[in-house]
Image (cartoon, rainbow, N blue to C red):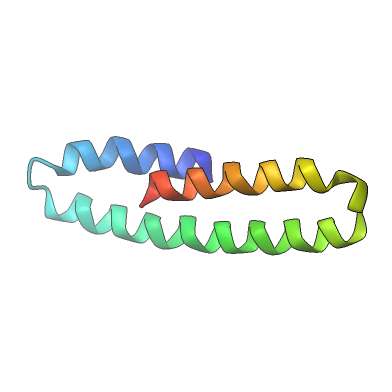
Length: 73
């Protein structure tokens, strides 16, 4: 997820000079990041229910995933 978000940021800077095809590619990448974020959060919730002693770490990982997803936006 981080790698995709980083690539999106790099490509966005290039697309800023009016490269329409690159802008479309970035929009598709955003959809992929959104999907991965949703899957990640679902996995974290499931894991949190099974491993209550790891709740704080799972919470922190959830925040990190959210921040990466926001970079993609």
